[in-house]
Image (tube, rainbow over all chains, first blue to last red; front, side):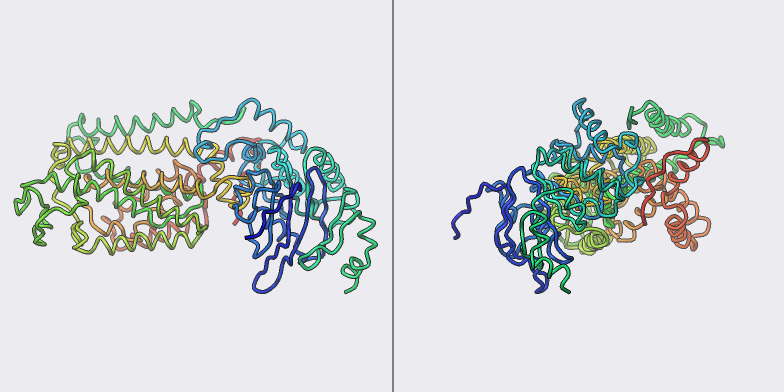
Length: 251
Length: 373
């Protein structure tokens, strides 16, 4: 038996390895995210960004390594709903809102409330819930569309709805997978502001390709390459790092 | 204000239909003189009762298929199990009036030279025991089967195939004489139910009314579930299952819950069906029966509870009429109906009606949710 790890970090990954049919999507990845941090993760296609999120949210079980949340919760042993209920929220690369439910109902399902099947059968919306949904609708600018099926929203509106769904639950750690993919420039700008605003009272990890967007967040950057960390630091540090230049431009 | 599932309009429709089924139909049967053209002959009462049992069965499938995306092609198995539980009670009620006059053993056991009642027949001489089994046997089977399937995340067509295999396996098992359920012939020649002669028109009317009540209560239960927050969780997982998990809901538990409720409703439908048709045999387990239920639901309108009821009643009425008028055409008509529904009106008859209602007002309705193919 290994000695138990003690860590103060909110998210602690150590030596995480995931292989699919011999291909190592993650190769002894180690990553520490402190509480309250805003972190951006960049890397070329196939660098393991999405797999890393899959490990943290319980979708993929690593072959080796440790993944701890708050220093005690072993993410390699819990399933998706259990991890979500610890306070880890995820926004997918492709916006996935519930298309046949209205915007309001999408937010209703995301409220921080009991998730037990029996409790949902008898759940009633309290005035407090209504206030929180109204506040979130205002924050993501969808108040007027609240009774529209989410499937009828534009791409950018779906992305915001999905962020709203994470917001309303008040989670500790948000994982955002390419939050501005497919957005117009002005939508991207608004999203950056929204994320900076959100980062004031929670920990956020953003995976992104758009370098202008990463720069506008002004956060610590981790570069992934072939399943492990290549460089870490400020955006300027990373952009001038010889290995990063080689990986991004060299071939 | 947001729409509520329990508006006065809904209750008006619900009780309106209830009045027609529970008061008008018995009145035409009992009060109108039998030789009048408006009279409802006695033989039609159990037939209507049978349709209502099918409607409850269709409702049970619509709850899981229309709302949670679980296409069970083994729904007939739960129906047949409920039916067998009542069949066993009715067999025990025959007592010494059987052909062999054995007070304890049903005729088929005497015929097989069995000396004593198998342990699993114990208690079936009591109605309360049989009624409890009608709920427990399908419910427990669904609970165990569903737990294994949903925990392993078997979904979509794979789930349909294993439910189909389940009902097929049960059919083969029940065909065997040494299972102790009457084998090939099943159970029939019932005499009485709770002391009433099952052949009497009054008993049949009573069974019909019991079916009306069961369908009504089943409908309200399904509406309660689908209108609750759990109903929205189900719709959400039907469309994006993994997203629901990342929100923190247990997809396994939610599915298991509706699957079990649905099996219990199907069992109750089967329990009311058997005394009205007077026989239960293993062919009720046949996979074709379960597939037919899916056709009733899709013709009526999948994902609308009223659609399941309407579809089951209309398709079966058409079947009764056509198998009398031109028996060889029925299967072609059924197949054509299914193809037509899928291609031309995917939301079924109720979907067609709703669309017609939306066309009338001048202001364009908000973009309907339209299912992505």
